[in-house]
Amino acid sequence: MTPTTVSLIGVPTDIGAGARGASMGPEALRVAGIGPVLQSHGLNVIDRGNLTGPANPWLPPVDGYRHLNEVVSWNSTLHTAVLAELALGHLPIVLGGDHCLGMGSISAVARHCREMGKRLRVLWLDAHADFNTAALTPSGNIHGMPVACLCGHGPAALTGIGGHTPAIDAGMVRQIGIRSVDPGEKRFVHEAGLEVFDMRYIDEMGMRHTMEQALMGVDDNTHLHVSFDVDFLDPDIAPGVGTTVPGGPTYREAQLCMEMIADTGRLASLDVMELNPALDVKNRTAELAVDLIESLFGKSTLMRQRATRN
Image (cartoon, rainbow, N blue to C red; front, top):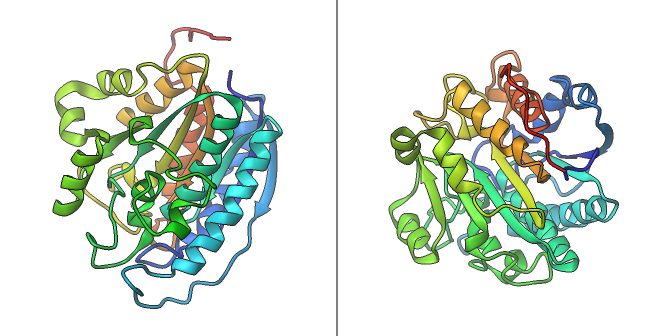
């Protein structure tokens, strides 16, 4: 059952990104009312404030990785913070920050699941597979590498953040909304066996069938983690991201996605990543993100009664 206490953890850094501005994401989500909105659904909301870490030195890659030491520092701090909230029985909501932070949050969730004997399912909502390595990407931006690192492909300083390498098995991940994958990365995704529901799949099969497949096998002993990159959404409705890719889910498709996750009653941790207020229009993307997060916690646009689960 979804916990009734949620903890907001701000992580104000764009250390792994190729554009500045995601460091302002946590405050934009607070301005958009994420705390009061969740409280309106009967949840006890604890805002832990923002974590601290090294400043962004904005340097070129070294041995294929930009800001490796700083990325390790931020993710290690986040790992500790998320693990502490899970130990208290809370549902941590990580307010990013760029998506390299998925390494810290998901490695903590995976560690918690190992300790509690739970199965883990990760829904990675994103325009990008984030399965790059230094050998595959010329930019060295680590926000394009977190899923690969979580699956054990990367430098030991990143793959070992949770004390267990790999932190997760590729079979635990379902990627949804993917529409921008580098050629070498595509081959690597296939080799690793990631299950990807790209936009063509969603176009052909519909969001309902996509989510039924992505959630198949989620049961009472499953910890469901959602890692929500705001660039998952079509940039026409969500311009405030640094890596926009046309052709993403519409508002209604995104709502259905979130509502079906909520229907499982198994959501136990959440990342909200890559919101870049510097590129937004009057905080519109932050407000949309909060609207969708509200749907994850029970808001429904439907008039029918929701099925309840214990």
